[in-house]
Length: 176
Image (cartoon, rainbow, N blue to C red):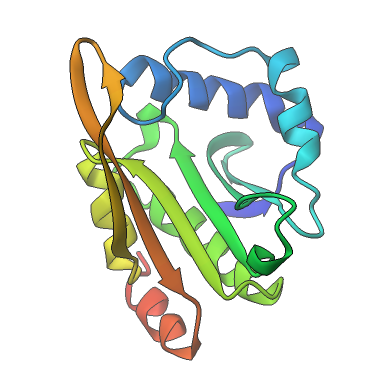
């Protein structure tokens, strides 16, 4: 598996994976499928020199991706904080793709000068919460019952990680 910077050519695969997460429910706040044209601006906002998108590629196919995004854009005091998100093709889950793409995003975030990473996860997404905690993320906040999906309410969990030298040894221990 190769982890590399995403290109415009990867956008259809990224959209397909994201739409799988929407269809699954409780993996993202979106509830309607997105289209490639509707995600172009989002893709272009991710300047690879500051807020990159990474794809995990296996045998020529994109099987997952991760993004580093601005947290509260335009607020200079938060310029060293990024939001990390990741998604894995439903046919490739539980094979280490999420671990590898998240590890790569964390390593790259450190190199880009970020000091803090945040992940915002629907509390019912226990797999994602567990993976983030394996990398040392801790729950820093909870917005209770703000996610409404199919007649039920769920919280939005804020998980945070201060990037430091100790992270390297933790990430290495998670290699698969």
